[in-house]
Image 1 (cartoon, rainbow, N blue to C red):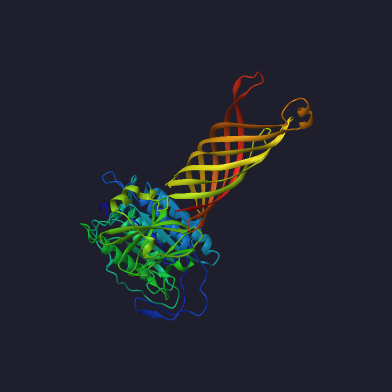
Image 2 (image 1 turned 30 degrees about the vertical axis):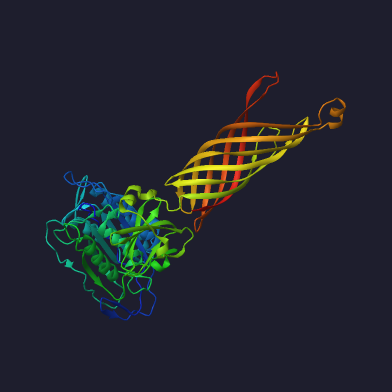
Length: 542
């Protein structure tokens, strides 16, 4: 567990993150028959604020800004929030927060004018106390924040605060996992405020989780960890019970306990549905048991969430590649998962490799469980201005990957026709050399820029165009030549993840070969032969 830093996280998430579901439902023991008519369309407007720097006397936070990004990604993936209605703010002062809320007010008014129901979600992660949010450029009183939130014309407003609460009074905040919901004959509407801690408690960040403890379980719960009834939806009741239990359990080993709290003024019937994990394109399932599983996106090392074999044992994820860290008592093991094309991955014990926690912490996002890749390549090359025509190239490569870097050694056969004014024939070569590349990731695609060198040995079998005349003149009708050349090369590669540690790629390269040959005056000289090449490849990582 990291130090007990305050992370005032206020998330006003008008309890619907996209849909209030009507039907025969029960919320914490209160059941109500839903309306038979379909509910009106609902849109979500979100304001998400992350502020690492608070007052001059407060230690800067490490993960507040990145926590806001995590919430943004989750809302757009599973909450069906359109990106244009997410206002992400790197808060340095009250003015930028209030400006974002004014923009949200305009967006909500435009949506409400079309007859649609509107949910407002406000999230703040940063320093604060029970009376105000703390920024580098001043404090924003919670009464002013709540007034600005109330000015947004939304049917439902949810505020989630992940921050310290030192001083002040517990103004009607319920401490504990149980809370009441007023029931009325229409859709749920009103306000909800979730807090990461109770009065007088500190909200904590964790180096292991790479974020605030409460926000970590907020995200994990909304990704399906809180879906206790397995219906593919996460409701407010489920989320609060989950985050309360998990946050209290995780902070029990630290000097300060954290008791998440809730304050609400809701009316209406039906579950308040926050996310629909069943709509995700990728799912991870873990073995049953008491172990914890932390899921990190690769190669960014960003925590996607946590799941336990004792609970739902299933986490909804975006497409991509992930590292799963299993905590089993004092033992740690890791597994890699490729969900580049979505689907469901069911992990089993044999998927995990033991790894010391010290090694895991040291290597961080650079862990590669399958660092060695073998490629089979086929393509061609062209030598502008040369007598060599288009040549075919076939071979393979062995690549070692480490984070954003690739180290490669390739070998290939190159062969093609040769034609000049005096000779026709063929040229054959064995070529290869090392490369080093820098990778950038774009979802399923990986872009690699590389530099390196190539050495090749070539041999030619040539026949004179006027063989009969040459023979009559006493000259050989054929010639065999061999020579070596070398030079630098550079290129770009685009790789597409196919799943199951398989990938396909296209490479374009430029090589400047230098070789020693006889000049017109008979003296040796260095000649330059530029080559343009392209190859297609299929690779597998081991």
